[in-house]
Amino acid sequence: MITLATSENSTILLHPSDNVAIARVPISAGANVRGISSRAAISAGHKIAIRAIATGENVIRYGQIIGRAKTRIEPGDHVHTHNLAFEELSFEYEFPASESPLPKPAAGAPAFLGYARADGRVGTRNYIAVVAASNCAAHVAELIAEAYRDQPRPENFDGVVAFPHGEGCGHSIGPDTDQLQRTLAGVIHHPNVSSAIILGLGCEVNQIDRYTGTRLAGMTLQESGGTRATVEAARREIDRMIELAASEKRTGQPASKIVLGLNCGGSDSFSGITANPALGACSDLVAQAGGTAVLAETPEIFGAEHLLIRRARNREVGEKLLGFVRGYKQYLMRFGGSFDDNPTPGNKAGGLTTILEKSLGAAAKAGTSPLNDAVDYGERVATPGFVFMNTPGYDPVSLTGLAAGGVNLIAFTTGRGSAIGFATVPVIKIASNSMTFTRMRDNMDINAGRIGDGDATVAGIGHEIFDLLLRVASGERTASERLGHHEFVPWRIGPVL
Image (cartoon, rainbow, N blue to C red; front, side, top):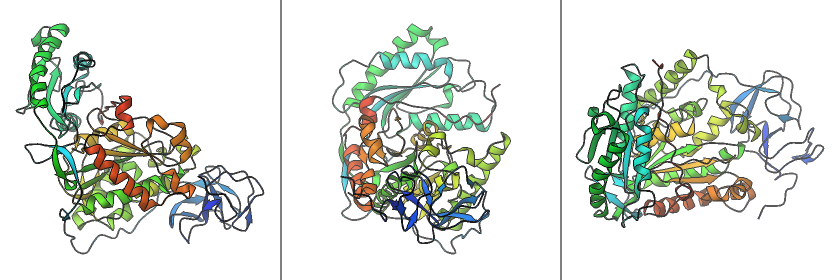
């Protein structure tokens, strides 16, 4: 039930120092809003000026700068791309003066049913992965997995899934190939994967002998005799792997074994008001239980990194985070890009104007816990509490990095509606507004839009997400799993040769 709009509650004021408010519902021209008259029709999620803002003056949301006024803005004006400009900010970073201790598993913390692995990690699913070493093996990897699609599965076994991609050859030897190998190794040696096959053509840059493990089989099309022969050879290996996977059972595991990836996509202005803060509340619950919550998307902390650095466990962690931001800026400059290229047409239609505004809302997914570590793309996450991973903001590439780092669950917030998942990691979808939740009901798991409707609180939805995490970790299927979303896109950073 949506609360009836009045002059006061038709908008949301996020901080006392803000000079804009957010339209909770559509506002018609001439409507009385907080004692002022709207000078234009304003869509839900968009900004209305509540004070006069001079040309060049800072526009403030969340108590933080989101840009500067291009022209004079009068009270009641719609504030968006026509009168709000991005400007890169200079921060005096506040690094911690002392070191905070790492969290420990809480006594009496909740539990879930998961698959204990030999390395101490815990799986929430039990798959066999067929991973292409290069694009030349991608089609055959898909054929192998397809052969098992309709085959009855034993209890405790979730299926055979393929990881095709367009990389693995035409790479220069160096950071780009190293990153791909780190990514594929993370997918192969993942707690949600019982066993795996690494599949190559045979002559690609990314050779299969770079991958080792007791539950890994390697083969190439050239040595196996081509497409059909390779499919048959792989099936013989997989049939043995299925027997092993079927023997593995879920057992009671503490919530400290949860490694939760945090992501957002198709964001709107409500994302930073409802879904992201609620996920932040859930992230704090995970950290309190001794688990790990991993925030990704470096372009979407730009303009909010100073707030995260304040929370760093020590100066070293803060410097690592800042190094990723600076490195990403140099990466963009090589191609003539800017962080402000990030807000998409959909983001802007949903009320977000600049990357500063988007980032301030996106960072809320990480809650309020100390930042305990910062890791590179696809690097294995081994630190409890809040951790940051350096990834692009592009959703399939970001999810791939998180999965390669070992997250066993992903929580994904969306305002405009994003249909995405991952082959071996359950992805929980959280809608930021009730309209998107209703319109894309098959894709959504939780409606955080109830916060904006006045029917729920941030803390309440945070607990709801946490409870769902435990159920999904124990085997309950998410919407993206039911729909079969298997997006997998490694981050290629170098030239094509």
